Image (tube, rainbow, N blue to C red; front, side, top):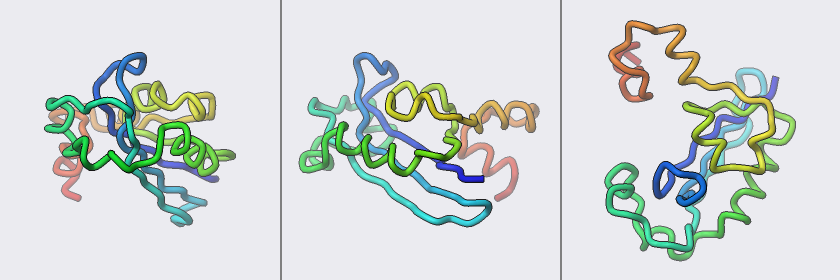
Length: 132
């Protein structure tokens, strides 16, 4: 099996109004990592302070970054032929229309099913909960 583990950082929560500021992807074939990739993305608008407090990305960081269209084309090449994996896949894929139609797995849904007693199902909390 080929998997593309994807994550995005954004300017907010609404895919109609907000923009991607960072994309990352790790491609696995079986259990082997065959490719890693990440890029900042120029959202062509200011990043709100509340978003910067979450991910630490500022306007200065993205000033010379590629456009969303260029970054998304690269991400599509990495994900083509793979099952896309994301923590809260509905959210991430709502910002990534080029790969939204690909088969996907949501690790948030999986974590809620496998670890119902965890304090919450954020990645950081799950790492502590599982002592990893």
